[in-house]
Structures are given as structure tokens and as C-alpha cells.
Length: 267
Image (cartoon, rainbow, N blue to C red; front, side, top):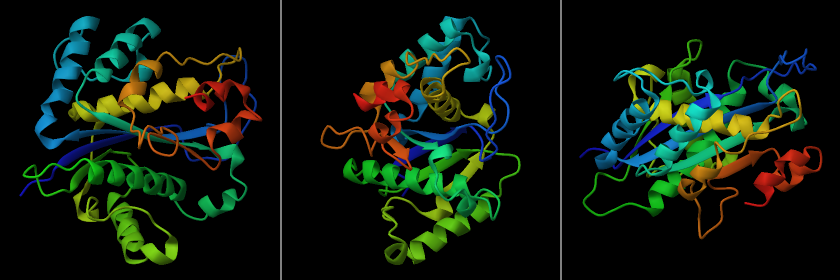
């Protein structure tokens, strides 16, 4: 029997910890945030992702099958893109890591991709809860096929090994992934350009980037997030900790030093 869900994951930002002041309008050094965004669809609705991208290309006047990269689009092109995602049969969840708030960054610098793996763990926890709570009888085997956007320097076999380690040591490590949904052997990575769902996940993570990263003039852009709020994962009506997971603090804790995040605190 095939999987019940298909999950697409992409990221915005990097894993570095070298933070430097902007030079004019250009950010230098490491990004302040690492954001992983996921688009979750039922397997039978997977073609909805293709239709979503087709509709966006039509609006933007782009040829069929042209890959869409959110950061390469102009502001006025991004808005119809996220509006189209908002009417697609999907759910979204994201993990937003504010790296300057990590009190022990050395925990994530002793080996390659440690922070990315930890962000993946947090994201997969939330994906597993959403899928577990929305299974339908007779619709697949209850598991999710998880596809990451391929990162050139990343070993996805190492990521699968990391998840196998978490599964074996879930209780000791307080891992909250529901393993009846997530199977490390069903984790894969594919080029961003080949799958509509990965391009949608890119739009989600990049859109969040513009909402948490002030530009050189101190302004943020929340209009790429606002249309998507109805399709972010909520549990019993609660968004924070489910559809949006801030780490290492919650949104309210981050507002103390970053007043622009009040937008998220009020959600």
C-alpha cells in the first residue's frame, strides 16, 4: 500500500554563526535565521501542487514547467504566488531558528549540518502529529513520503542515519516524532526544479524569511505570510508550536529584542 501523505521541505538561510553588520543594503556574514518550511498534501491531492504552479506561471506569464524561485521574483509577482498556495489542498508548517539566540552554538558546529538536522527533527515532529491526526481509513498506509529539496553538500543517507538514531533512542532523547507516520527509509531528496511541491515549500520558507528579517531600512514584509495563515497547521486552534515553531524561544520571547516580530506574537 502506498503512503497516505506527501511532504515537501525546503529551507531559507544558512547554518553559519558569523554575524556581521550589514554593508549598505547588503547583508554580510551568516544569516540570522535558518527556516525550514514544509508543504503537506494527501497523496491523492499531490497533483494539486502541479496545478498550483501552473496557475502561478499563467498569472506571471511564464512558460509551462519554468521553475519558480521565490527570491528571484519581484514583490508584485510573489503576492499572487502565495495567494495561489493558500487555495491549494495542503497544510503548511515551519521551524524558524533564530541563531543569535542559541546560547551554546558550539553544539551545532562540531560537525557538518548539525543545526539543519536538528531543525529537521523539530519539523518532522510537527509533520508527524498533523498526519497522524488527519489519517483517513482506506487512504494509504498512514505513512508520509518526505522529500527534501536537495542541498549539494548534504548527505541524505547521513540524515536518514540521524533519524534512525533518533528512532532508536526516542525516549532517552525526548524525541516526539510519531514513528507510525515517519519512516527514515522514506526520506528522500530531489532537485528543487523538478517538483512543484518543493517550489511551493521554497515560497513558504522564503516568504517567512522576509517576515522575520528586517531589510537595511528596518522594515519587514508580512504580506507573503498573511494569505497563508489559514493553511498553516493548527492544533485545537493553536498555531504557535505547531504550524509555526520558533526556536530557541517562542515568538513572544523573541519580541523583547526584536519588536518587529510582534506580528507573529499576535497570531
